[in-house]
Figure 1 (spheres, rainbow, N blue to C red):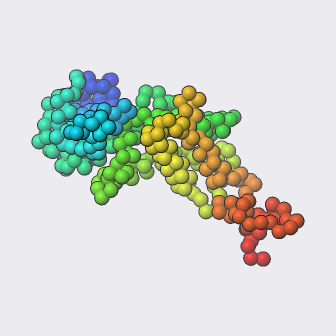
Figure 2: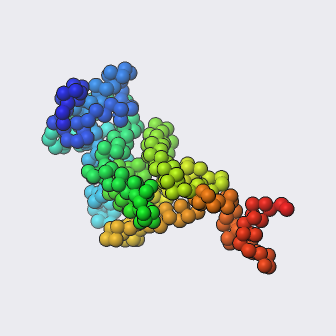
Figure 3: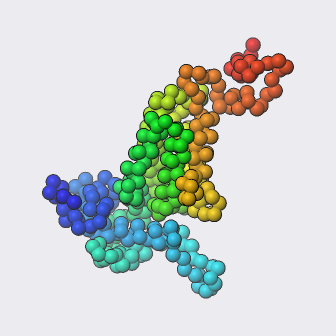
Length: 319
């Protein structure tokens, strides 16, 4: 990496990517008052050492292939499940001592506490760093760009949906950072700082997808059904994705992610959501989702009435 134009990070150019990058915009909970102090601390070697230790602890404890230890009883069926205890200040400081080169291996609890005031502050910044797109597997962002383009202008839209869903879901299942964020949704209850980070992470994540969805609607001549917005579409697909990821992690033999066929249940769910939420812009029936379902299934048509008559009745229930 050429750091000639970035002297504030030249001292860590020997670290592996992305630790050699300027991460002052990623770490937002450092124990410094001034912007200069925060930038210097964010890019210090000791901070890189704590982050490397934290990332290694996440992978070791949350997987894939997480290490499990037997409880004191010695039973092979009774495993320790320390929740977030593995990210305690003492555990992180101990993990720093095990850092492989070129990361620093010296950094005790006192130094950690002067870098982040609390464990919540450290976890919040560790989430920010772990979910930083630069941490995705090599080639993922480039491949996502290709599949996203196919969603917008590709000839086979259904295939593009399946490919995009598989790429994103299969990648997420393997990422320790995604596993951490999913675990924290429950474990961070009552911790405002960590919950705020999760909220911000989702906001940024959904914002990028909403841009894609808006472009797809324009290019494909589609519109959202009455009463629905891009937030509804993005939240529905995101919530479904989280569910498929969790099911795949907890029940890997369920087949919701099929790596041989490179298909996932999320692709089917996404198509169902698209079919229900969207309609042709130039041939809109003007119905809400509830009205459209009611028209199809909920109310018997009067004798001799056509589907068009039923739809008109849903739009104008009071003659």
